[in-house]
Image (cartoon, rainbow, N blue to C red; front, side):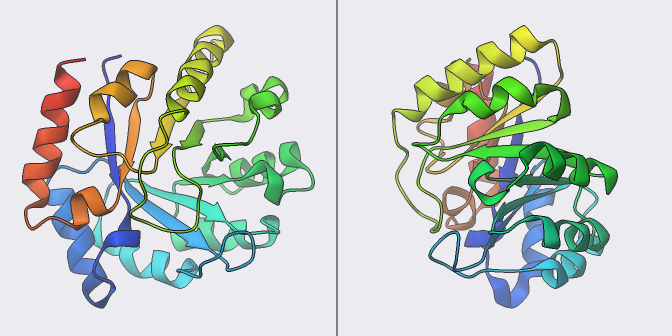
Length: 221
């Protein structure tokens, strides 16, 4: 695996100066900005919407990766596409018609992703690999930042890596939840290539030092 991407989650950023935060983290070496959307319905928390995505879009050139933890999901997808999202992913439990939702995302000009919670089976992938640009494995239960990595997720990451390789499609394998310098190499060895980190980066005074340390760990894989 030659290309690794680090995607800081702005859920852990200072929202009072969000434009500055995303600029700083990209300068520090971030490849993607991860944008967590929670609706206090599908998950027990309420975060940010399309207006915030639109506000930070002019501040960075890197892709904005929008993770929708909302139900129902279809209504909000065009709004995020218009706001400047490059990648939009959602949970299969949040869509009545997963294939249609994936096509809706692609029709808006965005890359499409499907997200799997720790206890969500991977069976959905059997039918939609040809419509996916990203698969996101949650290594915590969604809804809150700062949680600890669930080790069982490593088996699921490895299983998805096998499915991607067998499919012949170019699909990013992203992991979100408790990823930090100490475990990023282990997550990469399981097969991930894109790493979401919130408090592990934004919770530290020197973003570049953390991202550099992560890349050093990834170089050893």
